[in-house]
Image (cartoon, rainbow, N blue to C red; front, side, top):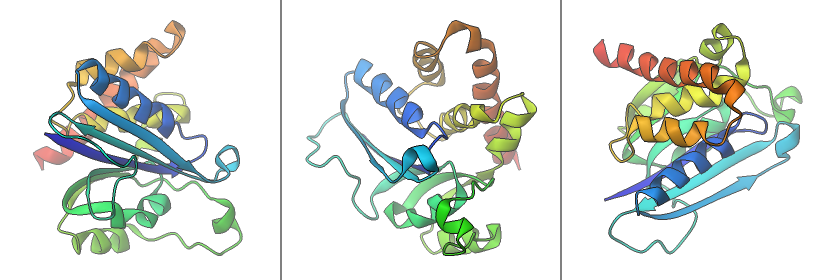
Length: 201
């Protein structure tokens, strides 16, 4: 059993915390785990791509997920998700946050934000299955857009069979100040609910 996951976002969105949480969960379960990030100007809204490779029965020889091999793509930011969509396998799953975070290149009109229809058409070429959610709006409704990564992490647990939701949440909370736990639990569960609603349609 294996899981190749990529998380695409920009600096400040918390995707490194998300990937490290999942990596630590997998290590606790006894899996072989390799986790790494490639970063642009992360502290200034630059691109951040996290690679997480998990295996229960084979060696992992590269920390980077090869093109066309990712089982899951979590797009914390839509333009970054499209930038790395070629990493997703043809049968892969995706969850993409629809709320844009204007990057330096977008502000300079070098990058153009794709419409949701364009994203759906692009992903459709891969036969991938997944969901578009407004995780940022959900986090804002809970009182803090910084909870976006927690919403996305909760959403991920609804499409993955390798790591249990309660295990992921427990590991997340172990890395966060206790005063934030109540909000983080709400955000995590909200992410799960967003996917459950879409799955029921």
